[in-house]
Every structure is written in C-alpha cells, then in structure tokens.
Length: 164
Image 1 (tube, rainbow, N blue to C red):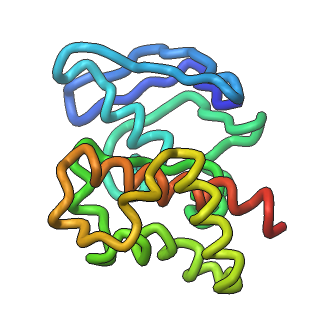
Image 2 (image 1 turned 180 degrees about the vertical axis):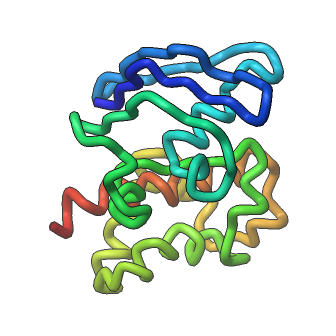
C-alpha cells in the first residue's frame, strides 16, 4: 500500500499540496485528475523521488510504501516498487529497439539472459504488447511507445517476485 499522510508541498511561494492524506491499496487502479497546476505531476515527483532529490521544494508529511517511509529507501530500492511512465515516454528511452528497451532494467540488475527473455515473453503476452517487440521505438506511435514503456516497468517491477 502507498499512503500519503498530511503531505504539504510548496515551490517558493506557491503552495501546491496542502495537508493531503490518501491511500492507494495494493491491486487497485487509481486515477488522479485535476486542472493544470493542481499538483498531479508533483504527486508523481514525490512518489518517484524527483522531489526532493532533483527538484528543490519545501516538503513535509509522510509518504509510506508498505508502512515504510519511501525517503528512507535509496533510489535503487524504491525503483523495485515504483516506476513512472511519462505522457510522452520518448525522452525516457535508452534503446532504439523495443525489446532491448524492455530488457534494459533487467540487464542492469544482472538478471540471466534466459530469465530476461522468459519475463519479457510473459509480460508482453499478458499486456498484449508482443507485436511491438523488436520494433524501432521511434517509428511507433505515441500510444505504442507508452505501451513499450509500460511493459518495461512491468517486467522490472515484477522482477523482484522472481529473482529475490
């Protein structure tokens, strides 16, 4: 479970989040909506660690992942459970080939090649993205790029179940 407890966020004089408390239960799909400037991206930046690690802002409150403060976890440990897919994921890709892109995080964790292939096969089937494997990412549509990015974070996020 991911939980926000009395979260406040301020950029200079601009208060973006004021006393936010909410929970995201395991196995649920949640949608955060709001007008431009309402704090949606800031919430994501708090969860994935961009704030406070890369963006200067005043933050208070707690964000807990399975009852542990996420800021007590280093970025590598946090990335086992938390991933972000950008609206336009083109800027987050490391490879031109979609299969290589999906394999990237697993390769960096020294997962054996046969397990990487098996995991990509499983998740591309589950997510119905198999037809996108082996394609030039920059020749795919924006939606197809998002699907490649989602498959990439799915194989890595679930990797911890297989390779502990």
